[in-house]
Amino acid sequence: MITGSRILFAWPGLTGFTGPCWRALQRDFGACVKCMAAVDDPDDASRAYAMESCFAGIDIKIVPKGIPIGFADWDALRDEIRAFAPDILFITGWSVPVNRFLATDAAFHAIPKVFQMDMPWAFRPRKIAARFILKRYLSHFDAAFVPGACAARYARWLGFAGKRPLYTGLLATDDAFFGDAATTSDSPSFLYVGRYALEKGVDILAEAYRLYAKSVENPWPLDFAGAGLLGKALFPTKEIAVGRGLMRNLGFQQPAALPSLYAAHAAFILPSRSESWGVALAEAAARGLPLICTDACGGRTELVRTSGPDANGFVARAGDVRSLAEVMVRMHKLAPEERRRLAAASRRLAAPYSASLWAERVARIVREVTERGAR
Image (cartoon, rainbow, N blue to C red):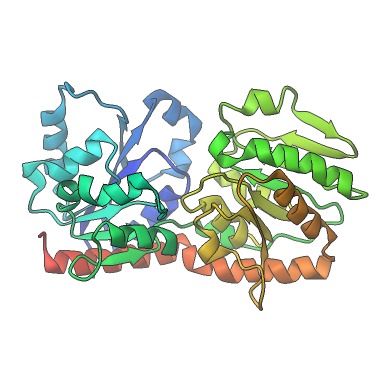
């Protein structure tokens, strides 16, 4: 049991799925949770999310992501963390100054620490060199927690395995997504949810939609839900006619609105050039949508099957407009009963990634790591 355990999460930013996960940990296991959320602009972060609903019941301290070297409040931050008296620290990555402080400050040396990351393995010089460059920093950690197989491979390269155990299942979705499945509509549409950014491939999706719309008789509309730097370039107006098709900009959606938004669509697309895992894939799958993603999405390993009894979608080549358009056409041509079969498979594949099961995984990690104690 971990009842009464005091757990501190150092998290990069505010993400909608974390609130339900942390609440499940408090509700189901009696833990006391505190979060240090590092964001680019604390004012923007508070405005972007409905804090009172998304993070209700969670003790959150918002800190700037890029704290300068001469930051004067390290002592105050140290005192605040000491006052919370955490039994274990879950620290994400190495680039945020507050997270490095938590991992390396002598005041927290005796507290067990779990390293969190979602970066997948890739055979690139920087990732190969990280094992040696980060060796001293990573020596402060007692275990690692990653989303799935792609990131686990990288974590093993960084030295986590054996005496420093490696756990999977870092990312999850609100239990609300596992309600009634999406229905097969007579007027189906595609959906993208995420940032309007180059790495997300939204420009590729827009171009692929133009090819798709020329290739079918009655193209489905494509809805974009999100915000970001490419928003104005993609959508000079809220709706853009593309031949007989239509692209619509729904803008940023609060987490509470997402389950019904997914349920109103026939298929979900994640066109990323680079994607560590893809929480939106899990949300869409949990809601019962067939999936389209690229081979750059780390979560495809756990969440997308292209053949067999659990087939639930298609995978396109990252950065390839024609490849993405082709799988959109294939999705379009599926009969409603085939889409229902894919939808059922999506829900089965998403089942392990509910907030409640995430809380069970974290409770196990807390129990096992604290029993061993800090290195």
